Image (cartoon, rainbow, N blue to C red; front, side, top):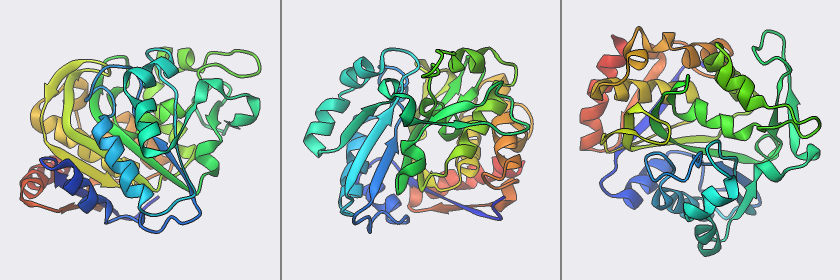
Length: 302
């Protein structure tokens, strides 16, 4: 369990400048000879904030490329649509050609591309297969959106975004892991358990816009106009939930202490991040984020 977590915030009015300033706080300048795996949010072909903004993704790629990595790979599995078609409709292939990064469709991986995770006390009936790419790459970057989730997740941020790293069907016998997940009363606990399999080096939440109700593919749009980043998924998601509460959200999101939310509580119990809001230090990097950080702090501590 992490003792403390730093979460950085910056206003989103100037996307490129904001991301360059934000990512300068993380070790993305020295990536020589390393493989960087990126998990974005392309669950469906619906536009931002349902999916990763191509402008945000392009800026992240440029900043990472400046660190001279051996390879940059974006890997994805969509939950609401055929992955290849979703990526095409979202402009990912065109962006990959322009920025010279690789794209892997996780649905196409054979048995050797997956690592089975099965641990005592988990709520998955037979464990789950996660893409080896995210376990074996030198650096893992996750960029997520900020949304509510009306199909049982309650909210979908960095923890929920990791579901796209798990196979829908077992490559050996066709078992449907996503059906198990989305029909289980333990869904939010299972989401957290996925995250125990890997550790990201950077989590970036594009919270310039978000869904305060509905989600994941459509909902009530809010405009917090912030980027949020850290290495602690629990802390980043807790800040995201506080931001949703600031704008007014669903009954499930608004109810109780933030660290009692099942995704967050289970992830903290599995030692994937801080265990309480007082362990989160907010770093506002400009005036707009400073004002927001004060309000977020009040909600976290409430």
